[in-house]
Amino acid sequence: MSRRVTIVTAVHAPSAPFLADAHRSLCEQKLPDGWEWHWLIQEDGRTDDVRPHVPADDRVTFRQGRPGGPGVARTIALAHADGEYVKVLDADDQLPPGALARDVAALEADPTVGWTTSRVLDLLPDGSTAGFPGDPDPGPIERGAVLDFWTANSFRAQVHPATLCVRRDLLVALGGWMALPASEDTGLLLALNAVSRGWFSPEVGLLYRKWEGQATGQASHVDPAEREARMAVVAARARALASFQWRYPVTD
Image (cartoon, rainbow, N blue to C red):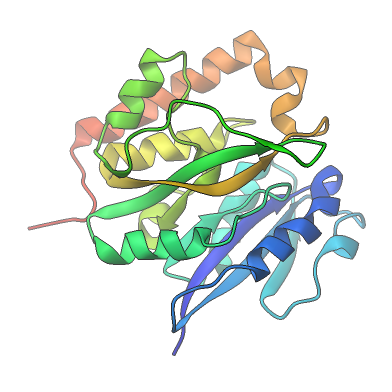
């Protein structure tokens, strides 16, 4: 029986045309023997605009639901996540070759690692890529390290939450993605790091598309009052989880 990685993607109409590129990048992944992937595409809403862009592939499942933002769409998709690991992939991004295999290898090698992240390159409109400094050292990321860095660096984490691959049971235990209008993936990252060790791969694991329609490029994303509230609740959740001293994996 094959073991499975579930890919979870939230999508809305503006980003739907990029699904073909995301699918192509998934088809180029080479997983270890005995492994397969299943792609869950969850529309944030119910329109007629996304379905035409969903790839015709038996490994792809498409569903729709009430609009609530990408965090809600990803979390509702968890009801159908049938893999022991869950990989996030935004509709407009792409996985470089080898990304999934590295995630699986890191999680299989160390049961105390609950999640993985990796280096990111921005994918620019002209097709070129651009990196940026600040990556942590390769290997384990100890509990609390992401929150400490994030707090000291104007709410910017040293690892990118769009690269997360997570043990499904841990992800479900934390309630999935936060119910926020933005930064829901950062909230998940900090919650994960509050209760479990992570892993950082220095090899590029994501091509992060930059385009004028992306949500993080909109004025509402940087509204000062909303951003302050988002950061406050993200930090409060992570600190509360740390204070409860719950740890993954659970040991006697």
